[in-house]
Length: 326
Image (cartoon, rainbow, N blue to C red):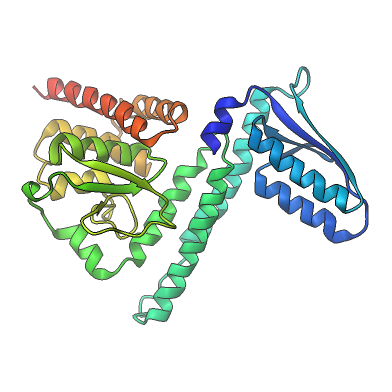
């Protein structure tokens, strides 16, 4: 939703309302509805969304609730000529979503599985909480119209907790097992939709060096149910995902015995630093690659196309690294 709204946002949609002082619950109810659709206030009783059919519909429904409650309101399309600029509004939307993402990240980091807890109840409580946070993350992402930077950190925090709560046998398998590339041919590889750095790079690695006939599926992790024969990557309890301080690309590299290729190792270091943001390798070209991948993600809402365009970028990066190594 966020990609399509941004792409058509030639202007803005405003809701201008008057809510009666009583009953008190109406103002609270409308405030929550406005938060849920991602609107921000530009003045008292004036709220804005990026232009688009969904924005108009959202505001029309909220206006109806206001009118039914004894208030009044108008919905209009607008362009800001003086005072507020479009860039300022976009920054305000990003700041609002960054605050939401930071709240999610902090809640994820606060989840602790007691060291002595071995019972299902303790683990179950953690899984219930992370499931709630995943739903909250999906709701925020749906109203993240302008790609707030906090999204990656929140996703990383959630991934870390999911990995911690994963069954011990899954963690051990990820950490220790090498696999035979010959057994991974013409498979269906599944990952979370909205692919970005690690998932784009991993898909390129899979198709280029592991499974040339790979098919990819991009799913909602909340509703996805594994099918027989599918392989999950960069997903909770996936066959190939983060392992300790390794990103998924590095895990695939290690488990398929590809880490001896110095050019692939160079690519892995770039992917690691962009994905994990720990500046472990500090390669000089990392920031430029991140900028290009961000541009691909912003301009390409379709996951298959992101992998195609991102794959071309990683292929060129690999070729350059091979030349440097030679």
